Length: 194
Image (cartoon, rainbow, N blue to C red; front, side):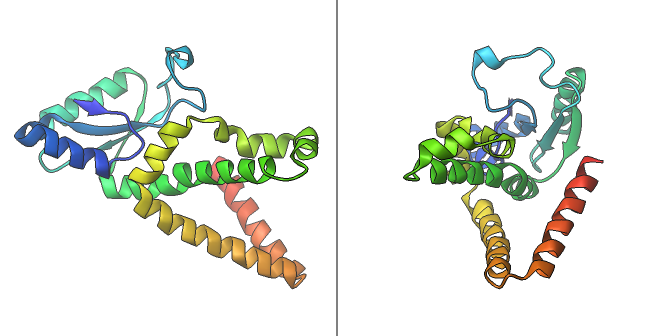
């Protein structure tokens, strides 16, 4: 038995409660595939090819069961990564869950502005790219956000500290600090995509 959800700690806890000793046959998985579209119409036969799949084994798992699940994902063309549920939830709070919150927040900021129509009319590629994931399923993202709230709140606090530092630099007209921060971010982005 596997799951393919975006959070692991809560899913594993539920599986343990529901399955009892049979939890040894449950393997938590998270394929990093898909997009803002959802449902049967978004299905693709190559969805998992060359895509990462996180597998979060638990101590109760039988080795043969974990191996079977790994083989399943390999046959779909996936790249397998193993990690604990806690590590998974921390990583994805940062690189998946927080970006969705920020995308929703920016979309709300513009949509709630008195001049929203003008802002939407003149929005370009940067706004489109940043808010693309705000079109994702609100119901699903409410579930993910609440299920991983501890890790998300930690990462959101860190993000807000960085935004506060940027704001202070803007208020102080501190070009040197702004350029240093922007440069560090740009270098990091380029290294990641290299």
